[in-house]
Length: 205
Image 1 (spheres, helix red, strand yellow):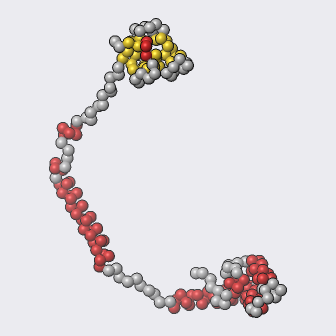
Image 2 (image 1 turned 90 degrees about the vertical axis):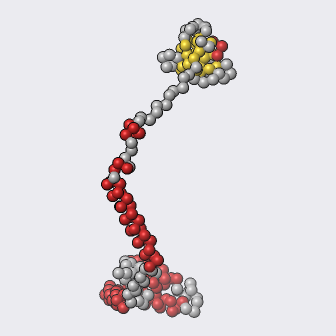
Image 3 (image 1 turned 135 degrees about the vertical axis):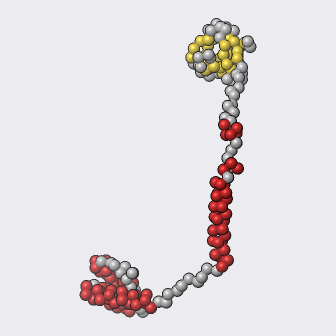
């Protein structure tokens, strides 16, 4: 239960009901300076200063503060017990209807599952369809070329400025991986190596 503040002593000082004595003293000094006549010449400054001093005189005394807190707790408890108990209104029938419909839908699902269990042949897949493996995609057959010169360079890229990786002998068969572009073709050798070869050194078999 939250502790009360029936006379507003804690609120006058601007501290919480569980504030320490040091926090109460510090808040009182700040409020006293705020409402001092030389700083707050308003007509109600003296009354505010008196109210702050009254609150501090009670909360700075250990015994008086304890009695004040106990009285506040008792008042809060009495107010809670005296408050009427408000019961929520009953749910209208049209709001209960979706719940009833949901229960009916669940019953229908249970009955359908029970019928499927009693007649498994009607829902089981046919043996021929169940045992048929999925079709295996076939790899497209790559076009081949024959090297028509000796010691043809295999390069990392299309052009003589790319480094040479190996040489290809005359008559060796290669697979075309990409179409010709600016006189160069990307190929794959029989041992799996790939690279670029000048198109003029390749002939259709």
